[in-house]
Amino acid sequence: MEYVKVGKTADLVEKKVMKVAVKGKDILISNIKGEYFAIDNKCNHMGGSLVEGNIEGNKVICPKHGSVFDLKTGKVEEKGKLFFLKVKVKDQRKYPVKIEGNDIYIKVE
Ligand code: FES
Image (cartoon, rainbow, N blue to C red):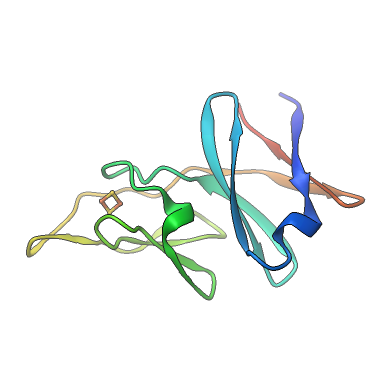
C-alpha cells in the first residue's frame, strides 16, 4: 500500500494536530516537537472526535468521556468515565508517517 500525501508540515506548526480524511477514515495527525504521528481521529469508545479534544504534551483527551491517548502510539493512557464507571476503550490505531521535503505522507491500509 502506498503512502498518501495529506498535507504540509507548515499546516501543523502552530496547531499541533489536524484531521485529514484518507480512504474513508478520519485520521489525526500530530506534531510533537517536530516529529509527526498519525492515529485514528474517531475515539473507539463512542466516536468522540479527538481533534476537538485538549492536548497536553503528547497526549490528547477525548472530548466525550475523557479517555486519554498517547498521540505517538495511540495507546490508552487513562480510561475516561461515563457517570462514575470507567469506559471500555482500546488503543487507537496508529498509521506510519513519513516526511518528504515539506510534505506529510501517511500509509493507510
Ligand atoms: S467517546 Fe471517547 S471516551 Fe467515550
